[in-house]
Length: 291
Image (cartoon, rainbow, N blue to C red; front, side, top):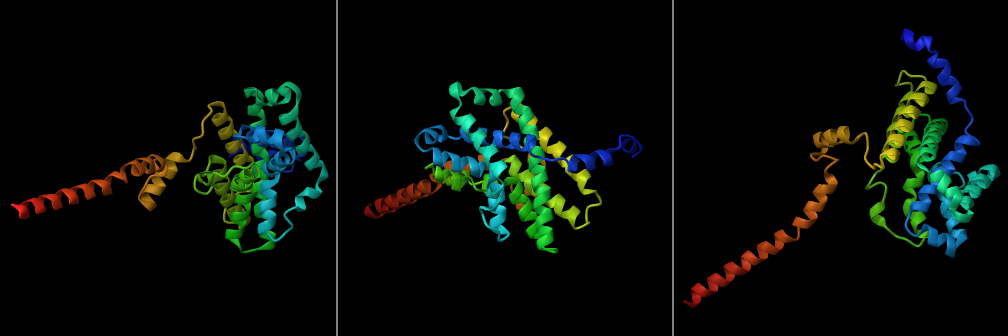
């Protein structure tokens, strides 16, 4: 504790939690979000065929969490579009990533060292959005702890939760990519973060909000930078989740996908084998009767 006091951690956390996100951090958020949109199959073709659809998809990637949270809390889903500076900045990023001559802007921001910095900055915004979502829901529903968790969760991962709707705008329908069925690391982390911030808002977690914002941001930024650098789609929670799911639900979460594949491959063979055995038994009985 003396070391933390000497480092003035509380004061640093206060300054960090009050730091403005616009334009630097928000710009990084928009760049990484639209960069991921360009990685999606068919997104480049859509940008050539229908720029309006491409722009709408980009706006969903940038502001989907705000739209979904506003719908849940009874506000207008286009309420965030009154912030002209944010919309113009995100639109400029969309145009540069998709239409910049020789793909120069895309090549610059997709360059790994630059991308790692942008990813880290994006996680600063994600953490702030989770905390803001929980705080907003707390003012509307003082004792609605589940509402606070859901709102913070949506604020942190609303883009992923709206991915199927965004796919429809691009003329793609892939229900198997539903984020609830196959939760990615940012979605899981947003849920866990929403729970932590709800506990803090309810004064059940003896930690200052600024300190929680600082440490959760460090965790998210470090995890995403390492995963991006290693091109990994795993999750730091995998080991703990496997153990807890095995204890509570009887199956490890980490091996569920492989188990489903094996089960799917094995399932059709079992009934067929049984029918063959029954048919063979019937033929033998008929042969015996004929004798």
